[in-house]
Image 1 (cartoon, rainbow, N blue to C red):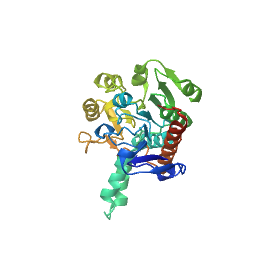
Image 2 (image 1 turned 90 degrees about the vertical axis):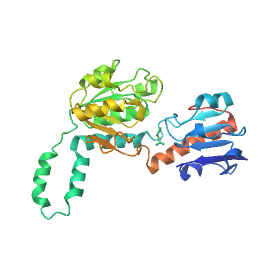
Image 3 (image 1 turned 30 degrees about the vertical axis):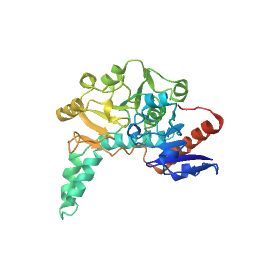
Image 4 (image 1 turned 120 degrees about the vertical axis):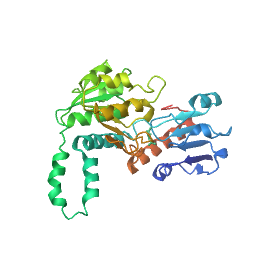
Amino acid sequence: MYKYACLNAISPKGTDQFSDDYQRTEDLQEADAILVRSAKMAEIELSDRTLAVARAGAGVNNIPLEKYAKQGVVVFNTPGANANSVKELVLAGMLNAARNMSQGIRWVLDNESDANISKDMEKAKKAFVGHELFGKKLGVIGLGAIGCMVANAAVELGMDVYGYDPYLSTTAAWNISRQVRNTKNVDEIYENCDFITIHVPLLDSTREMVNADAISKMKEGVVFLNFARDLLVDEDAMLRAVGEGKVFRYVTDFPNQKTAGKEGVIATPHLGASTEEAEENCAKMAVVELTDFLENGNITHS
Ligand code: MLT
C-alpha cells in the first residue's frame, strides 16, 4: 500500500485514477508521494519516506530541485497537460488587448446605470476602436508545448508568426506549423512584431530576459503578453514603457503591487492553467508518472 498526499488544487478526477493500492493521507510525513500545484515546497520539510514529488503543471520553480536531488527525491512535472488552456487564455489576452475589451467592459460597468448610456456609447465606440489580429505579426518566445500551440493557433487566425527557441525539441520541430518563421535571433521578434508572447521556463539564464534593452528594440505600440512567469520580465522597465506608450498593453497573468491600477496593464490572477480540464489532465499525468515510478522504477518528465 502506497500513501500519497495532495497540496492545493489537485483535481480529484485525477487522483481517482490511483488504484486501490494507494491511499490518500493528509499527513505529509507519511506520504510516499506528494502531488503539488503551486505551494512553495522549499518551506516544507519532507520525511525520509517521501520518494517523489509531482508538480501538476509545467513550471518547477516552486520546487527546491537541488535539495531534493541531494535527498534522492524524484521530481516530476506534467509538460503539455495544461497547454491548451494556457493557449486559449493567451489568445483571449491578445484579443482583449487588440479590441480594448477590458477598457470597454470597465466603461459599461461605470456607465450602465446612466439613462444616457446609448448616446454616450457612440463616444465610447470611437474611443475604443481596436485592431484585427489578422495580418499582424506575432512573436512567440519559447516553443515548448504552450508556445507551439499558441503559434499554430495564431497562424490559423491569419497572423504572421515568428518563433524563437534556441533549444527547439524534435517534437516541437515536428508539431509547429510550417508557416511559423523560426528565427535564431530574438531581436528579429523584438524589431518586427506587433504582439509578443513569452513561453520559457524561469531559469537563471531567462530571469528578466525582457529587460530595458529588449524593450527598447520593440516596435512602438507593441502588445507584450506574459503567461509564463513574472520574473521573466523586468517590470520596472516594462511599466515605464507602458507609461510612455512604447508598449500599448502589458498583458500579464502575474499581477502585483507594481502593476496594480496601472493604465495599459491587463492582468489576470494566474488563470492560465485554471480550467477544470487542465487541472484534470495535469493530475492524471502526475498519477501515471508517480505510479510508474513507485511500481516500476520508471522516470518520465523528471
Ligand atoms: C504551470 O507551470 O504549468 C502553471 O503555473 C500551472 C498552474 O497554474 O499551476
